[in-house]
Image (tube, rainbow, N blue to C red; front, side, top):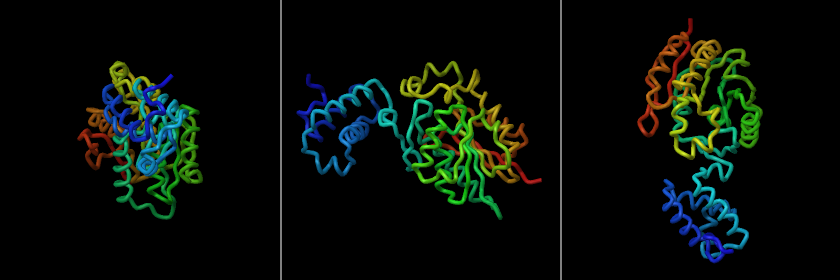
Length: 295
């Protein structure tokens, strides 16, 4: 039986046909998604797709592409279909236990690096902790940017930790990263110069209202922030305050409208606010920070 992505298409017409189907289904970036899915189905990068644009799809390629198309038309994210997402310009393998890394979260990396560059650490390696590391995206992005740093990622999910370890190895960072199964920072000891987190912050009642790509395909453990969305912050902020070295900083991701309440929790834990939250590209205060001031 022929499919909508059958081998009667050449590469260029298959890409255009898929983009049109995705657009009709209300997919936000139909042209980009079509290019990514065609490239993955055929094992070609953008250059290969351009140079081979007139080549007709083999039957097995058409079948594979149609399988990808049906999943995307059902609003499964492209990163889930391909099993990999990009964050901070780096590729991260995903699993069912990890969030798809999002551009908004890069704001946490940006603010953390700004703070690090203002803080002098003499005589030792900088130490970073990522609480609820998931795929390891934030931690590994920071280790990529701070070559002498050592990092520890925690997560409740053993599956997520396995994914993070794999990403550390693939990025050549395994010798500078360790991963620990625990609730938030409960198993950590010693002092850290930077502690980062993208915790679950969606109020429980709001989860059914999320976009289908999130509520169906992202793990609820990484989304559900309790009745008011602040359960994770109430747990991790006091833990982090006790683990920060003097002058060290805690940086967390915040949901829309949450920044001010998170700052209140930070000051209640004895941390000091020294800058406003950093907004993402949409203007939402996305990264909230506080420091442990030297005595």
